[in-house]
Length: 295
Image 1 (tube, one colour):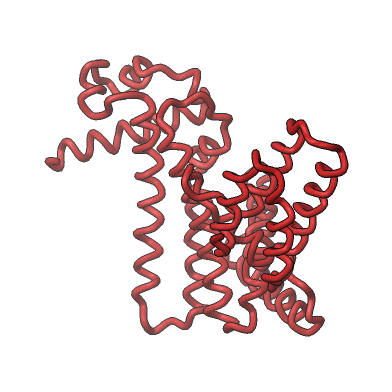
Image 2 (image 1 turned 135 degrees about the vertical axis):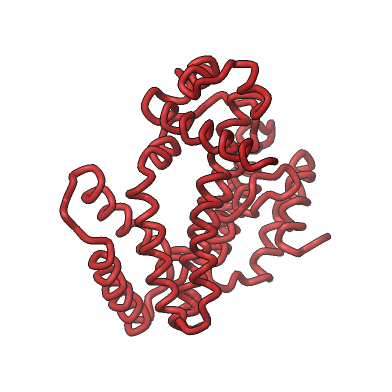
């Protein structure tokens, strides 16, 4: 695309984003966007084929903008992992303050979209954000923190959100660098406390993988399959005793998967207990496959 066209596209994206943020996405028409940009509706469709296509391009534009800034820090080999982490958080928070309309847009109730790529893209960005925090905590504190890295990521994100609300919504005079320094001290103390007390992580491996699970028809987490089996049992015309035993086996399976190291003998035994109910076979086989216990 020529520079002139690129500038026009950027102008449309920023204008549309501000309108979506102030008026709500669902209440903003393509005609209003075209009028605000000083172009015809037909010209707007030359750049973007639909309002949903425009929304997806807005998301790509702003996320790529911050990613480009982050990459400059990543390429600075003179910085330690902790220094990079600190600088990159400052960039993220600065971006949040400077582009509040963009983040308000994400917070809107955007429903009924036919383009599922929008939901998928936002989900991927949320997951990428948490994984970024998780990986950096491991880079900074070493593999000893790995069992607690997911919990640490949630702690950090939660604290950031609270302080950002104070700065943006309540207009508290808190400087970003001061906030980030304070948060780094807090995360040091939290991680030291977790290691010193040998606390069992809340976000264990199975819950973490469930959180990271991509929405996909051919990829379902074991805990989701157990839920499906329990729902199937409610509709089954079998004896109450058999139904109760099956539910008990599924509950034991569920509890075992919550452990740091699920015992394969328990998993196999509980799966075996479900074999007498033929109608559960397909889902049971999927569960066995997801647990790496192909029958």
